[in-house]
Amino acid sequence: MTSAFSVDPSVTVRVPAKVNLELGVGPRREDGYHGLSTVFMAVGLHDEVTASVSDDWQVEVTGPYAAHVPTDDTNLALRAAQALAALVGVDEPVALRIHKEIPVAGGMAGGSADAAAALLACDQLWSSSRSRDELSVLAAGIGSDVPFCLSGGIAIGSGRGEQLAPVLATGRYHWVFAVSDVGLSTPEVYAECDRLRGSAAVPVPEPSNGMMTALRSGDPEALGRALTNDLQEAAFSLQPSLREIVDAGLEYGALGGIVSGSGPTIAFLTGSPELALDLCVSLTASGVAGEVRRAKAPVQGAHVVTGPGRA
Ligand code: C5P
Image 1 (cartoon, helix red, strand yellow):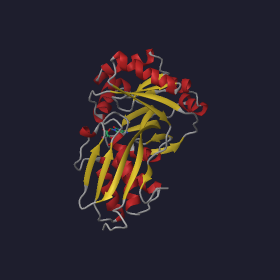
Image 2 (cartoon, helix red, strand yellow):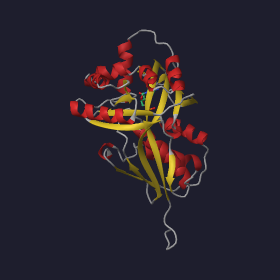
Image 3 (cartoon, rainbow, N blue to C red):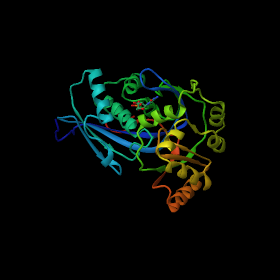
Image 4 (cartoon, rainbow, N blue to C red):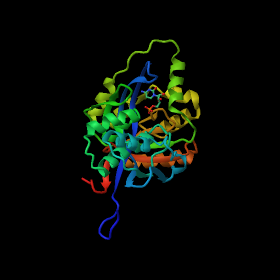
């Protein structure tokens, strides 16, 4: 209850987007998912999720991509909050306010990021004090990328992407993202990857030496050369215009360019903040890319920024 001396509590969590530096896709498993070997990097494009005590479960979305986010019970942040409530035995609805800066359905884990943020915000709001490991197990049930959005930094993902292991890495990286508004659905991109492979035997992927060496060296040129994505050809096959965006960014001097996750966002690595700005200007002027964003990386995962649980 609100009094002259207290306000209804709320907790705000900031959470980053991700890019897959390497995405090795194995054969389709019996459960429909594909075994992966991936290297995630958390990048400085952030959503903020605020959880407040409320009479009903609700979601409100603000920011440039708000119109594209569902506010019904398919919303991943809402599903995450309700999963945590069920786990800890809380019968206390929350209102979730999502300020969305991460492109929606872009291959940057925007929905997963909001789910990770909602888990952390509700854990603080309800003082349920679950460990990061417990939250990570719950996160994996919501989506393959949700555990990484909690942890952030740089990590190897295996299983369907939800099993994380640390990577020896150094350096600060400067990314440019060409946010495309062509539609690509993640299940369709995986299905297209299977279709293009046909009956060819697909080995179980593992992290490449080139990527591990590049990350240890902190050298953006080496990292640019090491970027790979097994879903890229499938994304190009479904949306051929994406190839032109990659080619344009490389021509304008990017150290590497790749479809981010299942796309359609294209991620370009550059050598400095100034070169990132130059690339943004060139891509915008060329007209091949719609919206262009810059971000530094790596950044920390979901963390409380305001509210009773602020560290
Ligand atoms: O786990 P998430 O809900 O993000 O996955 C969305 C869809 O992407 C899955 O339903 C599946 O079709 C595909 N997927 C996959 N293999 C993975 C991860 C996702 O086939 N490792």
